[in-house]
Amino acid sequence: MPLVDKERIRHFLVDIQKEKLFLENIISSGMEDFIRDVKSNKSAKYSLIVLVEAMMNILQHILAKEKDTAVRDYGDTFIKAGKYDIIPPELASKLTSLAGLRNEFLTHGYWKCNDEYLYKLIGDNLSDITEFVKNIEHKYMDIG
Image (tube, rainbow, N blue to C red):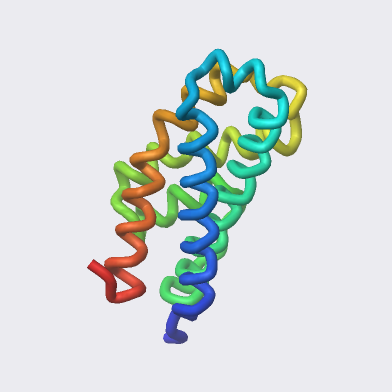
């Protein structure tokens, strides 16, 4: 069985952590400022795309190398990552909402994205993103 490429995973973990910090800073000023500041709002959308892409790249790489498993789409990636215990199933279920946001609103229907919903989703998922990073570091990077 081929081993995962730790350098590849590390690269994407760095991207996730940078984008998470950026998102924390953007929402720290509150919902009204987030909605009013068009640059921050648009930056947050792009940052989420980068963050979700990095998570997907990590999970798809691990699924392919360790489980010889392909995925249909982003939602399927989280589901299979939970099924194969790459990340805890409960976490996989929570993070599926980010995959849906990325597909439904940020890339294919950006004009439909409700800014209040986006703000709340970012705030609600920051701890899940941290948990994701910790799980991957522990299982695949020998950290923690």
